[in-house]
Length: 153
Image 1 (tube, helix red, strand yellow):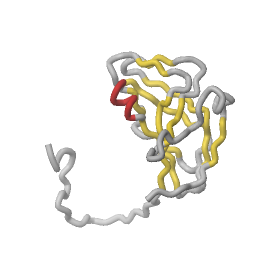
Image 2 (cartoon, one colour):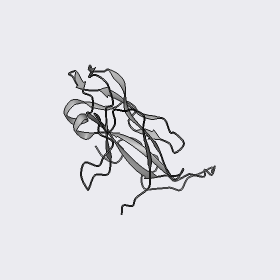
Image 3 (spheres, helix red, strand yellow):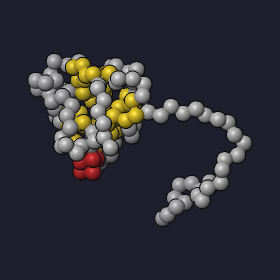
């Protein structure tokens, strides 16, 4: 089930809506809105190199019941090795600054990010706030303390 939330957006660059496309859903079934590189000139990302690319936008979530998560675009990751350097970006409800994307080139070739290129995707999710309870024992489960790789090869 999908539902809508109202998110305020502020263009922090005059390029948004002119030279750079604002965030958008590429298809009616897209879970994430594509974010574009709001840069003045191409940025070459060499293998193993990291950079921060601005998006030209800031958002305000409706409440602390929501978070915006910034994910890599699968095509960039699979085809070129360009992914988020921190795995997933977390935009907390109280952050209203420009959204920046930390990217890393895990590929074997340099990759050029052009102004306006779609570089990441933003997904909005509800947040569950945990109340932690300290206990001496946890309930036994089928997996138990089996760690990485314990359920398969």
